[in-house]
Length: 571
Image 1 (cartoon, rainbow, N blue to C red):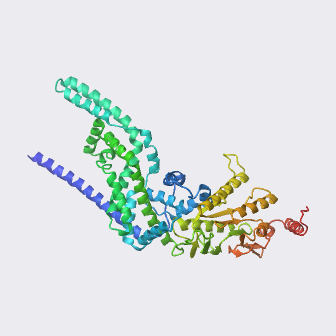
Image 2 (cartoon, helix red, strand yellow; image 1 turned 90 degrees about the vertical axis):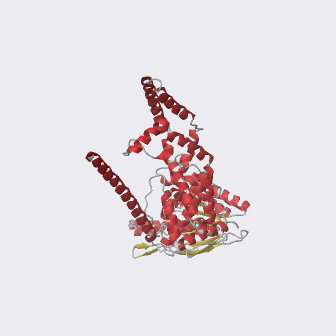
Image 3 (cartoon, rainbow, N blue to C red; image 1 turned 45 degrees about the vertical axis):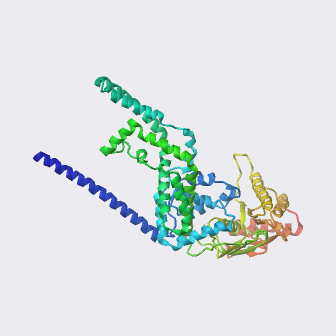
């Protein structure tokens, strides 16, 4: 009796120990949630703290965009010209893969409808003005979390490789186990032998099959979390997002049954478990193929409802993106504006920006510009031409994607936006720099003609037109190209060192320039946009500032002066 009492006491102590561990785990989890919630309240608008792995943006985060490509998105040339990867990193406050991928898609997909932009703006303002609701949504997004390595769309892409899977062979294997057990009632020895052979066969077959489905479990887990997040967001009493909530709830109903009993597929692992009950359950799974049967059930539902999965990613990603845009605005400390668009589509292309600046610069110089025809930009190297072009292009894109501009005011037409700026030789195709440049500009010319037929406006940016060829042909060809890029439906911003173009295109393009100041054998760039063409010639003077020999500088100045007087070069 005493011994029995000791066992009871020991069992009670062990049970108490387990209960205490469970309580501690629960309390630790609650504390972690509180710390995260506090961070969401207190660090709103603080700089993004996230590092990206090599290739993460192009190979994985870009997958939603690649699955939803459409006409007139930001093409690869323009994206890389404007360093939009870096802009994305600065803006991205997302907590989930859905948010990561949808924000990338949004930045590459300028909206052409004021109604869509106004709908997005209403959501942005709501979450900026309702802190509690914003934090609640961010907690849902964080609960969804991120995929470990790949995009969900990469996994979905490979589902077809599994083909039509059924569980008939698994049920036959279960029948063999039952036959083995039943045979023991006729002959214990023979029954045990049959059962052992069947169990060994089943376990070997199980590991082969389990290895085949293993790569897909990550995506199944994420889809399960996606549905859980969709259900939770659908329950939130936020009237502002009622249409999204209703659609998420409808998607969950369509996929009802996907996550039911999913613990059979995701729990356990004999090698990892220390819980006796879990170990027993794992052996039962291996013998009776419980997780393989459940996988096939979930796979069938998944293959049938990929449209609903895509819709949930779109809706949750879209909701997280408006929260992200609001937080990005908060990080700017008021140094932004909401763009205004001219409603008359038949009017000439128009753009006005006041106190415009580049979003990646820490201490930017701001400039104003208002144009109804092309802009020809001149000035020396490093004076600010390329940075200004990029600032104008980026803000035009941000106006129609995140409805937020780095300026005091932004007013313009709705544009399709292209650039040809940071080009390089294409070693793979064998194209020289000139060939790459010609092809890049040709694509813009084609887009301008296409937009004219569609009665749309094009905004394009070209840095140093045809720099890859000789002076005479460059000026002749550049003149005709820039004429073709100027019209009622198009605005072209072009930077050039060829001052001849300012006269040749004077009636078609507005002339602007940047200047540098040289004083006390030093150089200073104010980065202020000036009206009119560049009038100073400081390229040779810069050689002196940078320490070139005095005789070399004097001889260069003399040659330049002689050419300007006679029209020919003398060495």
